[in-house]
Picture 1 (spheres, rainbow, N blue to C red):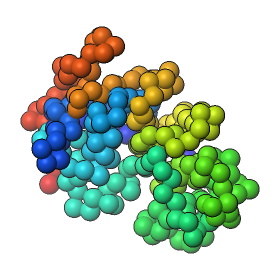
Picture 2: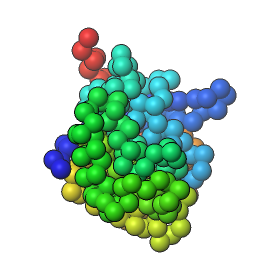
Picture 3: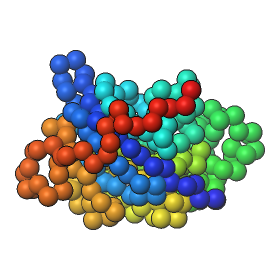
Length: 248
């Protein structure tokens, strides 16, 4: 399996609200190509909203999010742009219960218009990559929780993303299974070279990552802040107004 180059992620002066709730306030950060970063914080701190903005699932109210200099949420075909760059792993596996593990992994490849034979071959290779070669034809109901989440990881890798986003990927798993899933994510990052951003409330995740970004009350907590510090960080990336315009 060829290694995709990691994507460069730039978040500059981003704010996002939902009605009267401010989820993020002037957040700026940079994740280098191929880097593995943990985003931690308490429930409701804004970390999942940040991940949705990075992945182009949400549009910022102000500021910019660029993936390899592209603002995915501004692309005419946003779904295609995401498919070309980003893979998602969520807390719940979200597998289609009527499809086998192999067929679930093939689903993103249908949108990419891959030929049936190529889809099948790639799905089987990915299931082997995550240690499920012998479970390819099993339905989700016939798999354990950890196995279902590994199928979800394989599905996220189907289109060879340069950026893998994982939102609480072990939140529904027991501690031993969580360790195995995290081992898998970071091993795949090391082998395939993609950029990996993992969101979790578990601060211990930082020991696995290249670095940790903490979110509190919708803002980035400075690295030198006290353990209970809530102050927003000084921006580490240029504001959106300083970014070059996207070519028309």
